[in-house]
Image 1 (cartoon, rainbow, N blue to C red):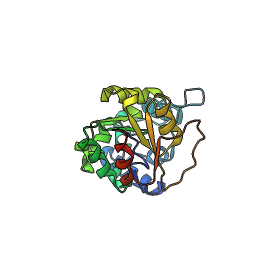
Image 2 (cartoon, one colour; image 1 turned 180 degrees about the vertical axis):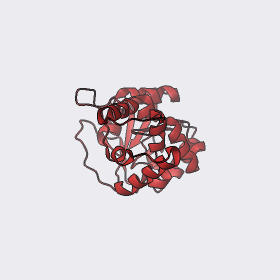
Image 3 (cartoon, rainbow, N blue to C red; image 1 turned 90 degrees about the vertical axis):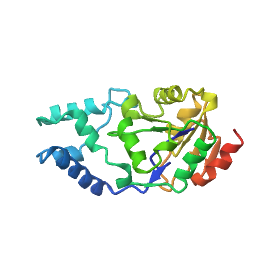
Length: 230
């Protein structure tokens, strides 16, 4: 069982301005006061136009931003800055109704549970801390973040890494997510089943040429959908 995280397992995000305040406070705690925090927090980081848009290279993007901005990092290591930017999930979001029960139901059915999530700052290590804080780390076998994998969904490499960790073949895996392209299309093109979770956010969806194998509005509906495939 593969699960997306944002708007699938957690939702109710803090507004951006509140997140920015928390991020700046995290930097002060870790590194002391620096003049560049405001500029850094407001910066946008993504693959450059001439690169593969699904390639994830957060540390390189941060290094290039500092070089282009003419700001010295002093004694701050780039990866430490990235890690400090990964605000704990329980401080900026909340669990979706039924999320914990769904994860534990899968474990009770002897299914390997893997979180497969697109992130910017959060690597696998930070993500494990998140789920320890939620009290659900024991219901999860593996975590694959795009930062650590180096590729964002729907790139096949992030799914292949998850399949490898779970020692699973595509036809024995199910992906649950709220994005038709990143989660449903990304999984089904490799031969996996996919469950689409309609998010309360209602974000616009990209058109894809596949349909999910099941659709749910709430994770409490998931066990009944999965039973017929076990």
